Image (cartoon, rainbow, N blue to C red; front, side):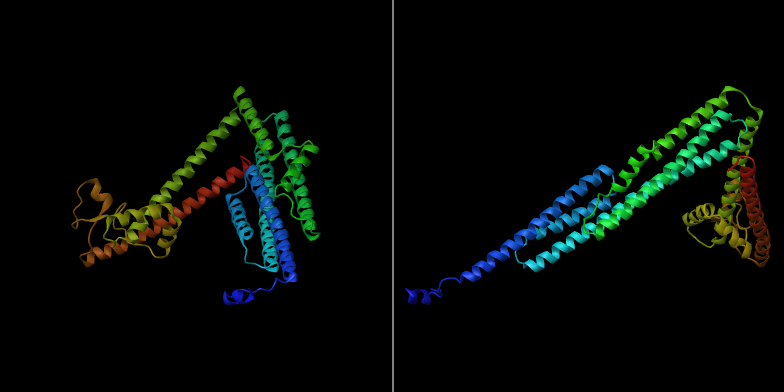
Length: 365
């Protein structure tokens, strides 16, 4: 029989029991590691559900999906030693902890920023109300109380989240694992409830109620000072809008005259829009190197010298440079483009200065 087995290339010896025991031990180790990996998968699934409830960014859930795919691959693998698999499992846990920490920090930062924004909004509105002599004392007191609540809410939220972050770091060092990414904001919400303080959302909602109350108060009786304030604000805003429009048109004119040599008309329209939107650049450039003034608005097409037919030619045509006299006349027009740039910059700066002074000294903002 042994000869037949030898002919077939098979061994008649019994397997070594020690080898079988070693293989069983290896299988048990791999099984234990894969159980830990499955626990990590469960943690990833719970983290994703929590993220969906909290409404965190899709970038975070995408990272969790990537880690879950990586974990599933490790569960299916069969060609790694226990040491190799354990190393991969440790890397997976470290990656999950890193992703969770980044998102927890992001959630905490967003919660603090929301509280800070609510506080600043209420404070800014209170400054306006204080500078309005027509506001009743009772309504002013309500704004001041809300401002105090907003400050206390911000301090409570920031202090609570800072403590939660420190506890999270301490838990990591002691090997207790990672806490819920929303624990900081959840603890902050509980602290607000305990102190009977409003959330940032409720604070802004209350501010809207006070503003509506203020509007109703103003509608009850006519006040000459309030009426004059509204008229002044409308005139001031109208001058600012007119200043921006004028500066934009001048910037567009200068930009197209700078690039008058372009042959394609659409490019000149583009330069006009560019100069109008970014008018400070062509205005400043024309102070240093003023272009010749070829056309009243946009030099789109050439026309014969000294021939202007209609309003369209006056706005959009330009004469070709054909002789020294005309070239000298264009050189003389550079003085006017430089003057126009200087006056526009000076006028616009003065308008902004008056706007800021009026808003600061009169309307309180």
